[in-house]
Length: 402
Image (tube, rainbow, N blue to C red; front, top):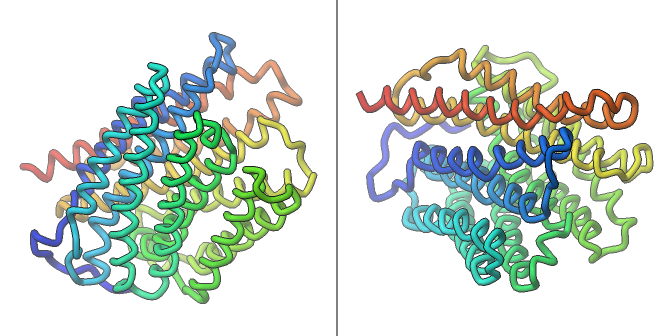
């Protein structure tokens, strides 16, 4: 992989990773993971009713808050260093941050306040943020090392598609926003494609893996086709029979990328990010495997199974990768050591425990109903992991200011 550039002119700098990671943590610790934990506790502990509005607000804050802010922060930090040239239009990333912040406020205000205009404003802001971030990533990807470019261009296209679908849903009284196909496109199209692409860099640089890219264009195209088939089938735009090839294609591509990333080969060096990345990929394969098993008829098409598959991915894979990458990227950007490493390891243990408990809901609900209350703690463990992550990241940022 190409080494990082030592310095960049100020005109080529977008918003720093500290600002973006901070905004992402604010989103997830308020209406993202925290609201999700409260929803799960109400469901499993029978202490209240979970409304459709709270589920939508939770999902929106996680994807268009936590994940999108993280993508913008990594784009502003990594693209100039990998390409050895400043960003052409850094103001686009600033615009993406501003638009995403507007959406984070307007979306819950519109849903809870029964104000459709605010929901439409939020989705228009999401689309604006998506267009700004995607334009930056698309143009910057032309100058990147070969394995990254195809993945980031596909991810940019999915990001714009997710923003456009969200706006169309807001204009149609949220009907499209409630389609599982929409959230699949957001999670695996937008977030998943960026994860599979950037993994080729971060697994080697921050994890010490023996990365050997073979066919990035073909794998990116296969992943895009799989996500498109599964999303369209979930949304009812294609017959249900198209879901199975989509799910199997996603699983096959993720397994092929795992081989490219060196997950089946010895580490080149021992680096702190390795446990985060290895376990995150395990949860990605588990999530895709559960979804494929449902499509094959090996598991019942039950809400608990779909929920376990979704959160194996969002908690076990996405959240864990964000934590692992951020704990590497922020100290590197500020030129300081990570503060309180034990907090980082506690975040790793908590996030994996949270994903395992969420998976255990399937067993608890079917074979051991009396233990369902234990799995209700899954959300609390995820929030605790994010708090430990935030504490370590905040202390690292303060250390850089001294």
